[in-house]
Length: 271
Ligand code: KIV
Image 1: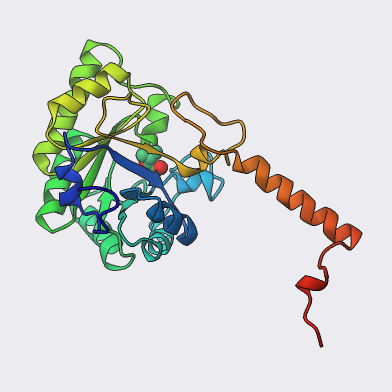
Image 2 (image 1 turned 90 degrees about the horizontal axis):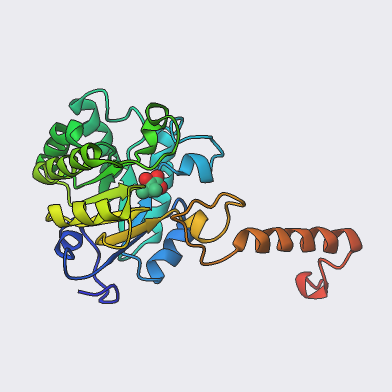
């Protein structure tokens, strides 16, 4: 089972990778990024609610709406062939009641072409995860630093430090596993704890700032591509510096327009 076998990645196939192969997941919010990510053999295209910060310019993920997420999920779904599309459920789209959670999660599959949804929270989400999976909606869990709880945490801080917090997080992961998630994102926790959670559950863990022992890794594409300026948390590895390159190209265009170098004859239609 490789990224290059041409088959669509599904919740079942991702789950089967536990202990057999590493999972690569990147965020995508638009059609062309989704196409590139898919062509690169990335197994999961996550339409993260990080959309709020890297695309819409909000300070946190909290203002992101269902309509924002549906719109961008549909664009990503149109761009992939083999990558699995996981849509992040935005703040307050699933916390109020299980019924509302099912309705909103269903919209991602029905209206936007997602293959699964992601929700934040551990044992508190067990009932919802059970209800979603019982109704045919695959769920990815997300524990550790869950950005929708940023105000509760008092900022974007490493979670799971200390014996009690470790135990709490491992129990959360087990509760999600028992409820039926096909994978669990672990965000911003000590690397050793990332390893412990990974060993404690039979579903793959996908880490972001959770160390090398997770079964997979996820990054926000804008961070990896160097589009986010000076924002570079410890867990980010930059694979390109496209922010600078973009600015250079925009400046060159402006200079060409100002000096009349663009458009040239080759860009103009003969009569
Ligand atoms: O919203 C997002 O991009 C995420 C990832 C960072 C896991 O939840």
